[in-house]
Image (cartoon, rainbow, N blue to C red; front, top):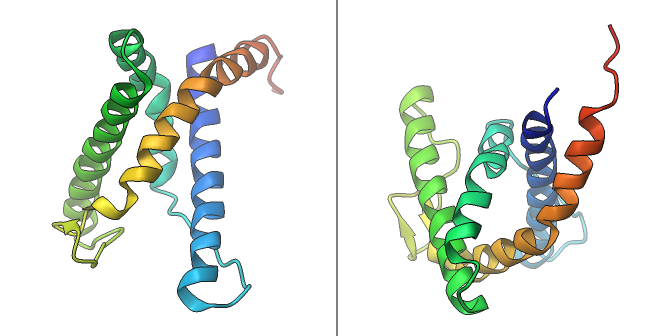
Length: 146
């Protein structure tokens, strides 16, 4: 597989992992239990995998900006991808894959409550993107079975 394909796979796996951890931690506060019931959706794998294609071009456009501007750009990008993919998946499956119901939601597809999360996630990806790139390059030279 090419390094780009590996980046797609790595971002898909990392995205589902961190979403599951995040929702597990939220479960503590929501239900006041230490169950750590985290979850994600299989649909999220290709959505998180899109970072392999979308993140670097955006980074190159905003890399000279302050961290606040970069964080706001990343946050906006995440919201855009979440809204568009959620709308498409709802249309395809005829059922909402996720449905935000708080008063800060927009059409059930996004919620402003997660703005600080998306802001921080964008800056973290910026910091650790080189690690994913190195891992993808290393994995691309390994022979696949078969």
